[in-house]
Length: 346
Image (cartoon, rainbow, N blue to C red; front, top):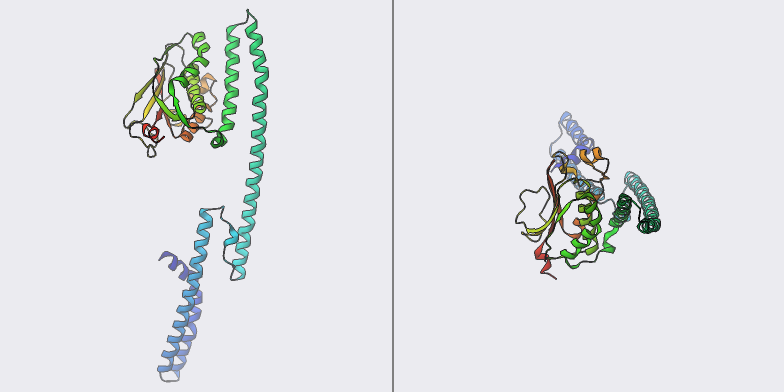
């Protein structure tokens, strides 16, 4: 109805011009006191002609609006499939749309090329930088007088390089995913072994009794996520330690993340908790945003704002969930959820 009223408003001048001859003819007949029957025939003829014209015009108007709505909703639509223009105005409108579409395609192509070149460069850099890092590690390990802190800092450099590679690879994870039933215990222990030196150097305790659960996941990418969580926990924990446990968590009423896509109502949940400085309440909703470091991250000048962003992105691609609870100055808990029902399908 609104579309029809809009159309009537658009052609109101034409309607008035169409009624004017009928009204003028009627006035002439009245002035000369001629029979009214002919004017009724003329009026009916004009009205029927006008209604037919309006119906045909409204059909074209409605079709044009429909095409524009499709183009607006789907910019990638093939404009060549549009109907041939019926007048000069339609032809000009389509030419403008074709011109804008070509500009959009050119811009997307240029952006894609720039992104590919940048990705290739940083991928090459990340791989090349591994060689001097490995050589430096060998030199430091062969020197008995080397400071252990130097090895720790070198390890951090290695982790930052891995983060760069992880960031680049997540842009196209589909070609690198290999889902299978994996033992969580082996993935966790591999990451614990990787960070063992930092546990020792910072004199932090680790509570982990081992778990027997298997999950459908990608071993490499899940290991990357667990490594990022452990890295953050070690970075912001000065005293106490880290605890890793596995629990069945029914529901999840406390979480703000959307769980409508979860297959299992009772997912298996891996919990990594620390006794670190925690996260401020106002920062908690934004910790998964790209580049967001929060107050504690800025004050300590250690955060990149990439680790949790990548973890959330990877977990989502794997069909898992990640969420965090924290109490400032006391603890932080990171929850990694895996649906049990998915495993029975394989």
